[in-house]
Image (tube, rainbow, N blue to C red; front, side, top):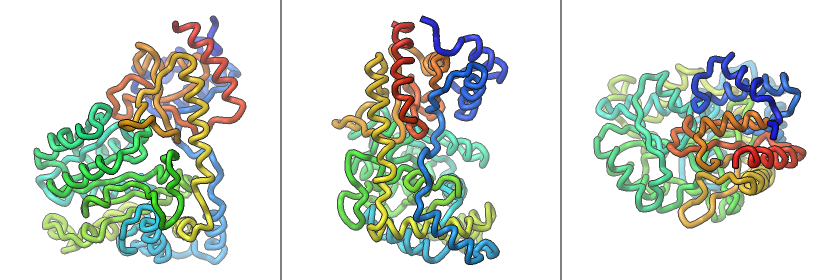
Length: 435
């Protein structure tokens, strides 16, 4: 059967852009090919490549930011440590939804978790000259590795697919025992696999981080978005799982982008454990006038990067966290639509011969959320991604996320109601053409 978009159009655009291997095409390259093919063919693409929120920004934040701007806040520099009310509410939020005690002092606003990881990498990689390497529990967010490339910092990585549960400890220790790892990085829920590390796995990570004295950077970009459980009631179990219950060597990266759909204002908070915040590393003390870890992070790294975080956006984030803690705003109610979309999309794909690549959390089926992963029979990642472009479907290859599995990452954020029927129709043709 004829494909919805002529192959010559897609192939021509890929060649024109100079993409040698479509398996390694970046998110923005895939997006660009899709946009141009859509324009040239007149056929609407079902865009699943970009991890951008597809919902309106939370009104609580918008109102607070507007009021702050009206009050004249734009004229003054923010404190490098952050707006005091935001620091206070971030500390409350961590207690309310993770059940961890982190002092307001250690909750530092950043220009989104992207800047948070950049500054964290700088601080961790300079803490001990013997520890010059970052370890990623993959798959993960490709840009974090690019940040290390920019900094000239080494990294190691392994795909957690075959190392869940009791297998995780020995695998981690095989890296940590070399004594060169300064930080361990992962997201939970995971981008792109949507796996959620459980308490036993987090305990393993925390225990080994303490044993080998490295920092865990826990990326909570998709906070409380394991929709199998309702994690949105403040100061009441169940809580968002965290490594912070099992080690003092942690930094939590809490983003406004996904849970509050506040991506455009580049606002997040890095919450550093009390013990780590006040810890003196000889290498940092020598380089930065005797400052402890937390103050190196804020008064040196962040100050050098951006001299603080958007003042009005800090008022927005403070209001969002305060209303969530007060129970007057349930952010889960706004974003659970991502899980509902994933459920519908998975049903369509699997009915037409696709399989979910990362399909289980140990003994449980994977949650429905912002992302999921698909594969098709014996097709490689690159073959599948390119083939789907002929059917007006764009997604990125798992290889770009550090995964060793063949398949694609699918994002649910931009799916519109009319596109389920489109997808069903196109995947029926795809299945017929690829028996």
